[in-house]
Image 1 (cartoon, one colour):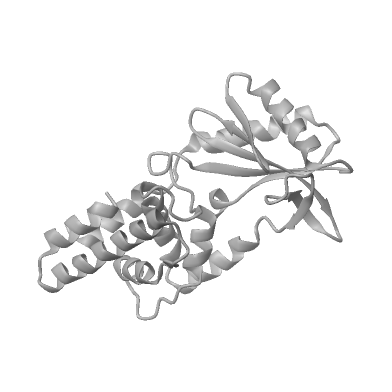
Image 2 (cartoon, helix red, strand yellow; image 1 turned 60 degrees about the vertical axis):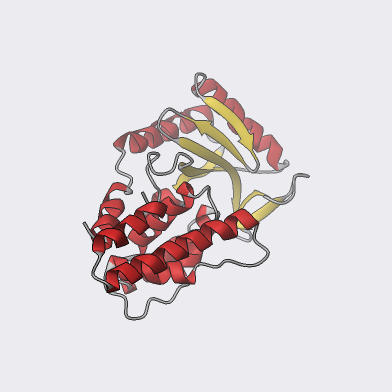
Length: 256
């Protein structure tokens, strides 16, 4: 094998194909409608699952599906609506693990975790969700699917290489202990320059070169990024010598 064939293998295996997740989403939707008749403005999935950049659990045990539950007539603090979702999950998923992880309710099923996010909506303020940085009961504005369009355009302009690239780098990220927040990593990759790239390997090498390793990062994060870049440099060196086996071996050290 070569680095290119190894990356192609990872690209294919890191694609989320678990149909039981779609079935679980349909069940969640029915149960929300049953539990909150007339109380919901809407509810929908968002995040990496909707962008085709979510990894299967075999590649990232922390993979989850973000799901927004938009209540009507929101007049109380976020905790009131977090409690509503907690009670909902306790009632309809009594055998599943459940915990609050501000600003969401984590519902852990056998095959996937749902991040249930309470929200409100108005024509003036758009969607509002619990503030991540304020635990005193404030709401903050959000556009849950704004990034989807940006990623779609970037992917289209780069011969559909960006989404597979993101899945590969998210796998490295998970394997390295989550050096970056997954969502922030996606947004960072979309901002990169990919001039003269044509193959998945080109995109991968180019993206790794541009990964930030700021001095204010924790030391362990800097070390993981440095190791990735060092392995890439060695792999490119071995390729120049025609030793594709050693090049692939270097890549497998960081992307097994």
